[in-house]
Length: 206
Image (cartoon, rainbow, N blue to C red; front, top):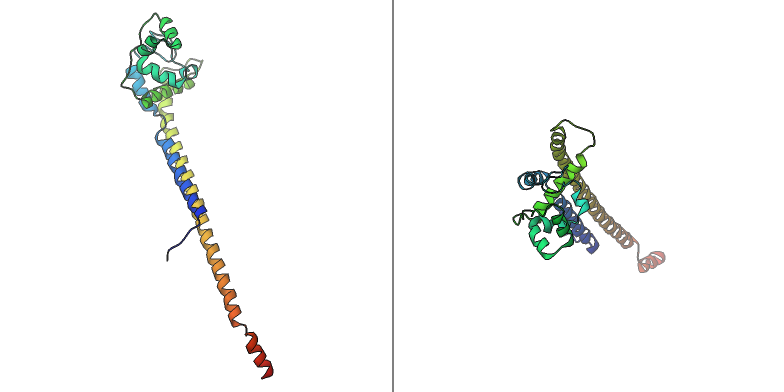
C-alpha cells in the first residue's frame, strides 16, 4: 500500500532537510583555529606579533579595526592596493617606514579567515596581568578542541530533535487519517444495518 502525504507535510520535510544541511555546513565550514595558528606561525610571525609592534603593526583586534573584505585583499596582495591608491593601504604603508608587506596570493579566503579567527582568539584570551609563558597557549589549545566537540554534539542533538518532531507529526497524520477512515466505515455499516423505509412498512402491515 502506498501512503500519500499532504503537500504541506512534504514541504515540512524539505525545510527540515535544508535546515540540516545548513546546520552541518555551518559546523563543517567553521573557522579552523588550528590551521589559522599554523598559517600565522609560518606566514606572519617574521613581521608581526599579536600583542606588540614589530616590522608591522601589532595584530590584536585587527578584525574590529578593518573590514573583512579589505583584510582579504590586503593580506593577499598589499602592494597592488597601495599602487591603486587605497587610502587605508597607503596610510598603513607610510606609517610603517614604507616597508612593503609580502603578498600571499597562495592563501584562499578561508585560509585568511582562519588566520584572522586565530588572531581574534588570541586577542580575547590575552589578559592585562602577567601570566606564565606558555600557560595561555596551553589552555587555548586544550579549550579549542573541546569547544569544537561541544558545537558538533549540539548540532547533532538539534538535528535528531528536529527529525523526531517531524516523525511524530508524520505518525499523528497517519493515525488521524486512519481514525477518520475507521469512523466513516463504522457510520456506513450502521446505516446499512438500519431497516429501509419499505421493509419497515411491510413489517408494520405484516
